[in-house]
Image (cartoon, rainbow, N blue to C red; front, side):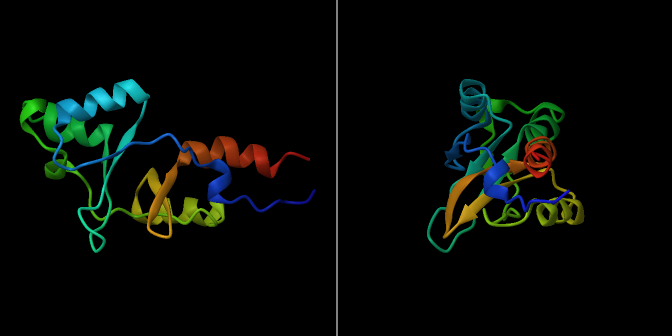
Amino acid sequence: MSVHRVHVKQVMVDRYALVDGLITVKEALSIIRERDLDALIIDKRDPHDEFGMVLLSDIAKQVIAKDKAPERVNLYEIMAKPVVSVDPEMDVRYCARLFDRFGIHRAPVIAAGKVEGVVSYNDIVIKGFALNHSD
C-alpha cells in the first residue's frame, strides 16, 4: 500500500469570512449564521499588520460567559492575534503536529500574504484520510 502525500490545500475549506476587527460581536454572529461558519478571520489593518481570528468558543468564553452585550463588544477585543497560519503546500501530517504543539484546532491557510481558506483537525482527519487511502 502506497501512502500519498496530502497537502493542506487539498483538505482546507474556502468558506470563510474576512472581516474588520471593528465590527461588533452581534454583527459577527449575523455573518457566522448567514455563511454557516465556525470562525471569522480578522483582516489586517495595513500591510505590516497580522491577521486575527475569532472562534465561536471565543465568543462563548469572552462575551456570553461574562454576560457582555454582543452589540457593545468589538471583535478586536476578543480576537486571537497574531494567529498561527499554515501554507497551502504543507503536508497535513505536519499541520496536525503544528496544531498539537500550539493547542489549536483550526488555522487560516495563507499564501503570499492572502487568505486562501481555513483548515481544521476535522478537515485533516476526514478529508485527509480519504485522500491518503484512496487506493
